[in-house]
Length: 500
Image 1 (tube, rainbow, N blue to C red):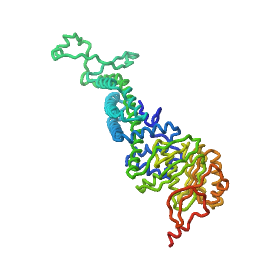
Image 2 (cartoon, rainbow, N blue to C red):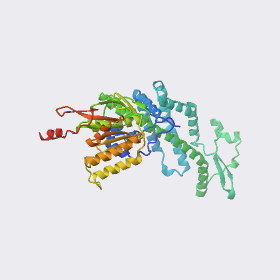
Image 3 (cartoon, helix red, strand yellow):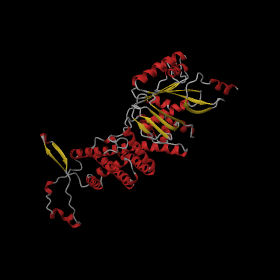
Image 4 (cartoon, one colour):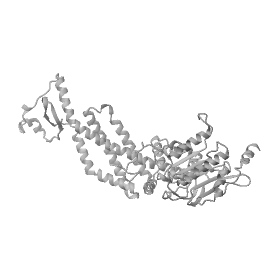
């Protein structure tokens, strides 16, 4: 039994390995702010959001599948939250029952498995009832399929039959089993049998030996002091229970797996809603993006914002607009402290959020999907480095080159600035040219005019130049608009701000 709330045909694995550059993406894009806002101090949700956001989907259909479920969750959050809390409670209850230390004892396995199955079934029934009552409110394929799965695999008559079996497996009337004698008069093929129960009135119970003709000659009793005999009978009883106990334990594990998977998958939508609610309270626009094939090049957005900055400042921030097609290189220049890094983060994070099935922070967002995401940001001084900053930059770049694939998104932030402009521009130019040939989309923030000028002179159709806006007085609007690179980055503005 599967919940299928993250994929149509497979389960979401919260333990899956992340991409090799996961930690770099988290650091450069400040993704921890997103994880923490989604989790609201729930460590499990935080881990799920981390895996989901960094495990980008490659199929537009798969992304839309999650988008539709998330829309349902947003519109019916109290119902989904109630299901999630029941799910968590069921898992905690199940954990308190089972003790792995005693797994080798069939008696313990059987009794604990009965309790585990009863607990899981009880909570699944509650979840099923809530979903059934709210079924008309769900429009998504995923949630409607979950209702069908629970109806088909755990209908009322089936659950009723399970409850009867569990009651019988408590073996309150003793153990009735079959076995045959093998070599050395040892028992073989121990099989637990269902006892044909007969019910008697009080008169029959007193005189049943006479009435129904039970032959007491086929009975024997173990003396209370016969420890060896009692041990042998106990072993026989355990062997008879062993097969049933193991089967029931597998059933309990199956139900546990379903509840754990459902919790993991619901956690993604709970976390996404927590972010949605926070943004909605700040009156920040969110939208479900329109996606294009990875082979296309589309960047069309309105009022795009940096969500990590919003979550940090806890207020709305400056938005940016762009509408382009068939562009593979975006060269971003302009004044220091002009909002370029924030803009870069907003683009990359929007791509990650889009490809995990979430909304993005914009009034409108259209983009092609990317095969992978990579960042290469200038790093601050680090005393732990064993070599120079430029060596470290090149090492990180080498790691990216080994992993990157066509149709990936590559984001540079003042890369190769640890050396002089001439060398840095030459290296950056060669890498960018090679990436463009491999059909990799590139956003590149730079203060190296030589590098920007190289592509400006070529007047390539697949290149666009953006610049941080600054008025004549030196004031920054923190907006990024189309504009050719200038020979200055206006360092004088910072000098005047500090020394005058």
